[in-house]
Length: 120
Image: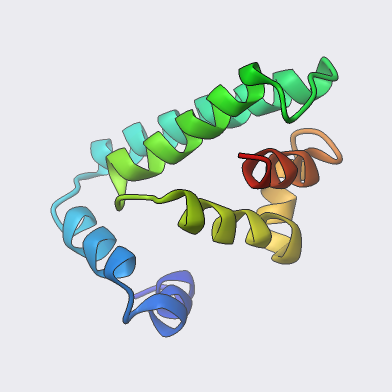
């Protein structure tokens, strides 16, 4: 088990979401993880494009991206509720790894994604 998996289990191991994700991903092949990453990257690109074009994070267009973000998580890992998605959003600005992922695309994107998710 890598350090990220150990950390996730320590933080969320008792949650139903963690258990569901662990069960689902236990049968995934490399291709499944790659497909999940493609879905994730597609949503991130949509956020980056909206941010780069100064689309208000409260707009219908960006809120559709927020829904796509939640749907991608639900498709591959666990049923992601709005509340859970908002909890994830807090990590996007507080955890340097998530912040680096988003801000590595465009500086300020992590805050934009966070704000968009919280605006729903």
